[in-house]
Amino acid sequence: MDKEAIEKLKQAGKITAQARDYGAALIKKDASMLEVLDKVEKKIFELGGKPAFPAQISCNHIAAHYCPEEDDKTIFTNQLVSLDVGVHVDGYIGDTAATVDLSGKYAGLVRAAEEALDSALKIIKPGVTLGEIGRAIQESIQKFNYAPVRNLSGHGLGRYEIHTKPSIPNFDNGDNTKIEPGMVFAIEPFASTGAGIVQDSGIATVFELRAKKPVRNPITRQVLKEIESYEGLPFATRWLTRKFGAKAKLALREMEQLGMLHIHPPLADRDKGMVSQAEHTVLIDTDGNVIITTK
Image (cartoon, rainbow, N blue to C red; front, side, top):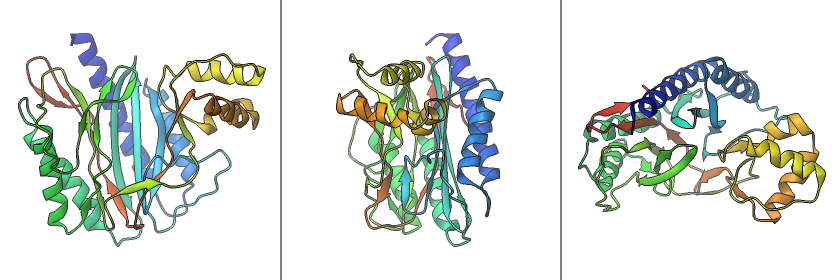
């Protein structure tokens, strides 16, 4: 990994952290979910980055991948709110998340995810195994009598790739794969009052282009050209409907039927338990130094 790549990773991480903190401060009772996310994405551009994926807000038992459409009217009341933000600079990615408790009931759940993240970060160095990281997360969350979400995990971050190896578990799965210099990854604990298992829930509004195929419809060709400008990174339905109108959804449906898209539906706790999230991006440089880019 050369110096230019490291500097761009650091820059992306810095912008991601600024956008996360800016967005978290906007999450208040009576605020609009859609307006918060629009402001976060605008801030990313103002700071010199681009979204690595659509800014997302998941509430209560929804753990991940909720992204409102352009006509969404959701107003914050007393929800448990997780904000997930990704930024790239020339394809080099920062990924971070934080949870805001508007109910006043789940401070312990928020702290469980945050302390699990801190516990993982304290032990990370070359030679530590993925299973050991998972054990640190699991034990931290279980100290609060909550469940780690077992089928969500941290993940590697490649250039223009949001999910690569390694997959970093939120429990001790016995994986003996070792952390090595040159790795870039997100540590992403989720803590749940419920099952600690998530499942698909609701309509997907986040997609990735996975395969290019010939399309006949002129609108679909226009939408595809726009999607290609995202360089393979995830995008939101509302990004397209704002530019192309309702026809964008028909184009997405055609591409989905052709097997061109990877779909990211919202993920919810199986027992509708409340879910909190915390996340940082970690860079292990070529000398083995541990750099948390999103602090």
